[in-house]
View (tube, rainbow, N blue to C red):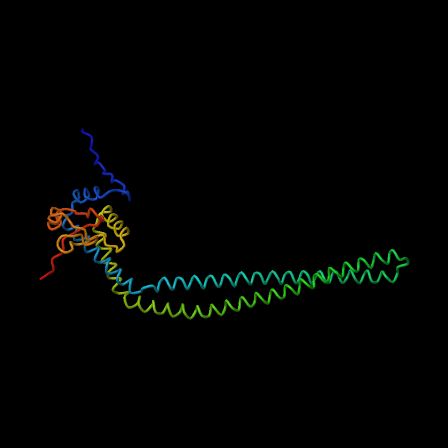
Length: 274
């Protein structure tokens, strides 16, 4: 009995972001879809992306301004947390120095009580020297406590100033957020419909074609990957003249034509329904 022949699984070539448009033209040529239909889908996809971009532009600089204000608020809160940590450390130092003063006072009292029992001058001088040293250490602690309290006051002023700044930022941020929310709400329905249309169109394209489209959009300043003929003989993206033979190919819609100057896909201007 003859062995059953297993179907050969076709392995697709991985998409290379650096690949030339030769492979894209080959993809169009090998595609089961009609070239004219694919070009129309690409044109409609570009139109949908243009409309989405217009809605995004309505928001202007507001998203960036909101993000910048939020970052500034976070920075202020981080500054306050840092200063509060410094104040906490100063308070710990003050507590430690107060405990040291209590210990020094105990030592001083002990040596003073010994003075009453001293019988010779050398021992008297030695104890007085110890008392002098302990007194100096006590004064140093008191000085450091005073300096720490001054530093705490300065840092509390810093926190107060930052809190005042935060109050202003909070008002500004709330206003910007409300303004942005109004714009987003007013365009949400339209943007949702356009996004769905865009996704539906993208789903009709093969992976290599969609990748090329997205790559061209990302590489040009106006995000136009698909353009029509301008003024009868020029690329609608870079406005360089298109050769007569290419103009014929564009008008026929039977071949993928890519501008040799800017790399955009050029299609014929769609006929308006009568």
